[in-house]
Image (cartoon, rainbow, N blue to C red; front, side, top):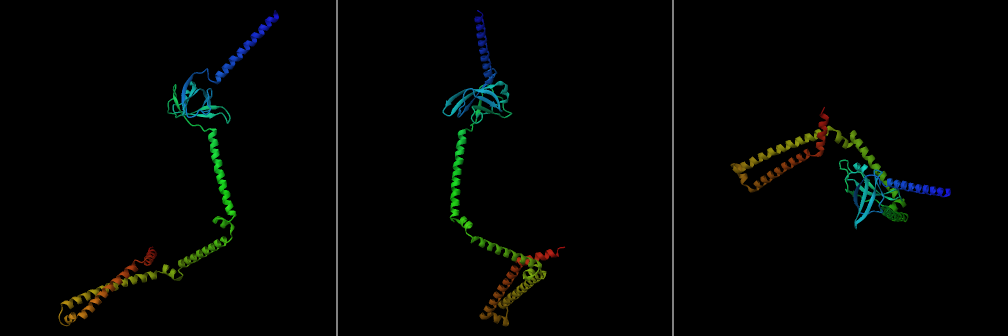
Length: 315
């Protein structure tokens, strides 16, 4: 009888312990899945669920704020994801927050990431729709890595081809690297350039010091004075020639209108032709003298001399 009672007590303790463990497990799982907190439901449309299933965690700023309560295909380009989010964090999630599929580590399970919205936006309401973002998957990384590897292979092949041509002396670069005739030529050209530069430097130094014709031409103000006087003489000659032309013109008028010997001479056609030819030649000579004087006056050399003279006269 006593043994029967002990067995009953042991069985009751075992069942009670099992129930207690079961209740604690349910409570633990409920806490983990936020089953015992107030929820708010929001949805989002994704282009690809990427392995997301019901029960996956939802994180906001690195903190678990809810779970995925449903994943349903809407059409061939859209997947509806339903999210159960704790109301305690509702005030931090904005209507313009964005949703992205993430992963716990490299080989971990999928999760849903909610990115913060703008501070001025309103907080989420029941069944609000959040904008989704395309997540970077392992497949995308593998495709990018494949492209990088392919490009590296092409570059290595091109480099191998270039080095092979250089080794066999093909192309200008190979000639430059393999032949020794170009270096002496470059050296000779460099020496010639240095010689030219030294000669030019010496010439400039001599000109600055007043040596030689160029130095005297640049530094001697007497030449400028003589050039100016020459221009003045040209002006005087041009004026005298103009006066002579006026006198000849008056003389020609007297021949046409006068009497006596002058009239007889004017009637001789040969003499008249000679006089007219002389007047024309004098006129042309005067024009040439005026052009020459103007050209000398506008010459850059005279302008340089005048400028240097003015600079030296200025206190």
